[in-house]
Image (cartoon, rainbow, N blue to C red; front, top):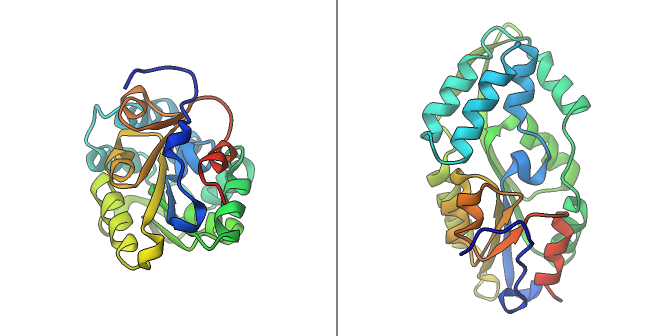
Amino acid sequence: MTDSTENRLPAHRAIAIRELGLLAMDMDSTAITIECIDEIADFAGVKAEVSAITERAMRGELEFRESLRRRVACLEGLSTQVLAEVYEARLRPSEGLAELMQHAQANGVKTLLVSGGFTYFTERMRQRFGYTYTRANTLGEHDGRLTGKVCGAIVDSSEKERLLLSLMATLPSTRQKSMAIGDGANDLPMLKAATLGVAFHAKPTVREQVPVAINRGGLAQLIALLPE
């Protein structure tokens, strides 16, 4: 598919909302406007360094798990209070997120927020917007400080795809269609596994490979592709 700064919302790709079983989305730079790890890094004085690694990872130039370990290591010793400061002062939902979530929930669609970011933020987004499921990475903490480590298995591109497919397998036969939204290379397997993949203000390598792209404006535009 050709790269463009125009939106690509083909009407023939629409899914009747009564057939949609799962609406899945990435968090950073998709459901929200920021990359949380970059903003946390700002408090450690290493935002430029961490942001550069994030950008390369999202373009697919670096293996995601290793890039995450490198970035999280830069946060060692930071007070865990920084997480609250980022959430309260810097995290903003993307334009149209509330409307899209309301449309899905009002029509019985399960919702998934799956992120290579952190559970501190996905849990608060779940409480705020009512996601059915969330999955993300857990930052190591000790005595009120970040350890610079990630606890447990890292949520990467293959885990995002696996989770979407495993959740779809639990849904009734009348709800076997899915929409997935993301912006980075680590979202591509999930976007391709979904019935309808959406690139949202995405890297060129992502929007070239999925049928729907929003390059201007907000998430509420997707409601037109989910008619009642």
